[in-house]
Every structure is written in structure tokens, then in C-alpha cells.
Picture 1 (cartoon, rainbow, N blue to C red):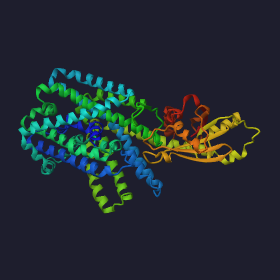
Picture 2 (picture 1 turned 135 degrees about the vertical axis):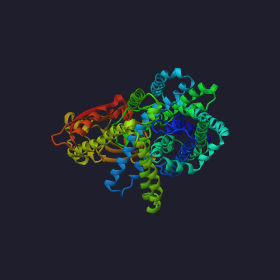
Picture 3 (picture 1 turned 120 degrees about the vertical axis):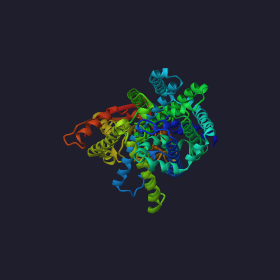
Picture 4 (picture 1 turned 180 degrees about the vertical axis):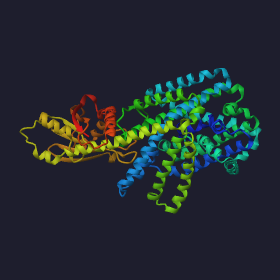
Length: 616
């Protein structure tokens, strides 16, 4: 329990743990127009307090974390869970699918902003230490970010062991700095009463609504509690939040509020002004390290999301490199890594400060939160068997909070809020296009397919050469002969002595137990149909999982086995199955997809690719 709690601190709470760097400062920025007068300071602190209690503690820790897909959390795991039921209509399943893809797209929008805003927020402490260092802030932040993305290919195993202890030190210091100031201004604790939040909203009206967009910054990263549940389990995450993280965050926020009560000029950067002058540079270094840890969590999350989406068929296959031989889940996805780096560097150069970036922050996060609420509501009604009245009462209230926060953040649309939405729209369009394109390809392939039984009965033994060894043909259709097999017969008149028709399936569950991995059907004449099942959190390894099937009558000698993979090229059809713009986008995505041999970890010297042209 202690070890998992410590590890969870570094991975799960890095994002929300660095929110004190900029949240209070942004609540009193030019965008809100608020001044740090006592009534408003207490009102903002009360809003932050109850946002942390209602959104993080009540919603995620107590309710949403109950909706696990065999221990796994996250928007795609939740989508797979609620859409798994056989009685669902195709229309409702498509709705859940769209919500899951939208949540994944918004998550990637958040993945761009988190490294940029946290690293800039940490390095900006240099301006507090010495105004003359301000011109160095952006160059230093860029160097830190480039170095962070550059080391991803080496893996995060060793560095990850430092995440927990460093983050624990970070939260202890947050707590100590906050309590140190609270002792000097104990009157700030009055903000624990929701009376101050309600009074603030009533007094300021539209200004208070605008300020909610800044208050949202205090809960960014809340969805990580749910997304990372599979790595650590409910209990360590809940324990870490309630015992360590929440008290430390509240203490620091109240310390910053107390400082503003005594010195309103600290509004420029209340977080770093909490630290004694002699500790300023060490605090900047520690804050930068904490921001790197928060960024690392989003980068690793982006890698995992890409792997899940590829296995679920929502995006093209991506090249995945394993950075640890012993620890599952440590992967590196080069395409995602470098695209993220380009996006993050562009954001830093365009916005130049955490204040400007904060205007773009929040929309993607609150959008993901609302999608989580809708999907968990569906889960409560259909799986947990809640009645409609309690389900609507609980999740309707939660959705009202989510919608309010989204609406307040939308006021920042022109100030930069459009950036994550634009990026999420691009991602969603690509995911939707890929799914529609795959369905179109499957339809075209089925039009010209031939049932395997028909093919076997029509084979003339005197015309077909049957070399020794095993040929493995990858096929998406269980009952039909794959195109590459048909091409091999037609052009080469070759059918190996042993033939394995291999179908890889990914059910709506994170892991498949070893005893349910393979299903074998013997079709006769040396032909076997094998179905390998992988969860969407697993990495397929076809040679590894074919080897044990020798005991079940499927001959498999690694040195005498060849893998035949279809290498399809897609062309425009006279009778297109997709709109022209979507068809062109699908063709681009298909060219970017990694080949099946790499994705399924087939030995490169045993793979034979046979191409065909498919009109879509």
C-alpha cells in the first residue's frame, strides 16, 4: 500500500499538484479584473476549496472511480465498458463510440497544454528572483521541454522511480509553506465555509462566472485519478488524495490567500512569494522538476492512449517501442512524441507566458469531465441498476457543475481557448474518418471474398504445390479466405502443408486471461483457423502466442513458419463509400499507418507481403 501510494503520487497527481503555480495568480489576472481585496480573496479560496471537494473528491474519488473496466479507468476504457452490452442498439453504441472518441481527442488537446503551462509557470519564478532574468524564461522553458521529449526514447523506468519521492517532497513543501503563512494570517481559514463562495458569486455576477474559468485550473489533472486507476488501484489513489494531496493543496492555496491579505502586491506571483528569499532558487528548481514530472505523466498517457485507440481500431496502427523488458506499459511511440513536441514548442513561442497559456487551458479538461459524467451515468443506469430518479439527481447535479465550468471557460475562446478545441476537432475528425474508412474497406473486401470451405473443396491437388512448413495468413474475417492466400494460389499455385488463418480480435476489455487467449478450429486438409484475443491495454505478440498452440494440433516451428500479410493500397472508386474529403483523408492516414508485421511483432525475416488494390 505504501509503495503504490508513493508511486501514485508521482504519476497520478503531478498535474493537479502543480496547479498552485498559477491558479491563484490567474484568478486575479487582467482577464478577471479582480483585485485582491479581503472579501474577494476569501471568495476565490472558497470556490477553489469546494471545486476540489465536489469535482475531485465527490465526483472522481467516490463515484467515477467505481466505474472500472476490470480495474482499468480512462475515457476509452469507460466507453468500451458501457458499449459492451449485447442488447445495445447500433445507434446507442455509436453514440458511446462518438463520446469516447471526443474524450480521447480532448485528452490530446490537454496533453499539449499541460507541459507548456506547467514548465513555463515553474520557470517564471526567475522573474520573482530577479526581474533581469525575465528574457531567459522562454528559452529555458524550451530547453527543458526539448530535453524532456528527447529522452523519451530511452524509457522512463529509472527516472520514474524518482517521481514518487520527488513529488512527495513537493507536496510536503507545499504544505509547509502554506501552513507557515496561515499561522500568520489565521483569518484566511474562514474561506472553508461555502458562504464565502456563494456570497462572491452573488456580489460579482458575470465577473464571478468569468472567474470560474480560472478556478478550473485548480482541478486540471482530476481526470488522471480515473485514467491511471489500473496502474495503482483505487485504494492507493484515494488514500494519497485524501491524506497527502488534498491537505497540501488546500494549505498552499490558503497560504497564498493569506499572503494576499497582508501584501496585495504579491499578486504578481503569490506562489513563489510564499517562499523565504533564501529558498527562492531551490524552489524554482524543485518547481521545474515537479512540472517535468507532471508533463511526463501526460506524455506517457498520450502513448498509452495511442496504443489503446490503435487496438480498438479507432486510429491507424502506430509504431510502438517497448522501453523495458520487464515492466509492462513502458512504451514509446515516436510519432506521438515528436508531434507533441512540435505542438508544445509552438504553444510556448506563441503564448510566451503561463498567464497567456492559462487562457487556453481548461476547455479540454472540462469537456473530458463532462464526457466522463455522461458515460458513468449510462453505466449507473444500465450496469449498476440505479433507478432513474437517483441517477438523474446525482449525475444531473454533477453535469450541471461540468456545464457551468465549460461555459465559463468558453469565455476564454478568443484568448486562446480555441487552440485545444481546434486540435481536438482535428483528432476527432481523423479518428472518425479512420473508423468509417476501415468499415468501407471491410465492405469492399467482403464483396470479393470466398468462404474457406468453398476454396478447400475446389482445390485440385495435382495443380497445387504444397511445400513443407507453416504459412500464417492474417485475416480480419473468420469464415473467408484472405486475399493474400487467394493471390498466392492464383499466381504461384502454392498452398503450404500447414496453413494457419489468423484473426486478431480486440474485445471491449483491457486484458484477456491467458486461458482465453486462443481459439482453434481445424478446417481439414492442414488448414487451421486461429483467433487470438488481446485486450486494448495489451501489446499483441503473435509468435509468442502461436507457440503454445502446437499442443492443440497447430504445427508451429519458428524457423519453418512464414507470415503472409496483405499490403493493401487504396484508390478512389467510381462508386465511393465515403465523401470525397473523407476518402482523401483516409488515404493519407492509411499511408501513415505502420505495417502489420511491426505492430504484431512478427519476425521481419519471416514476413511476406502481398499487395492488392482496393477501391473505396
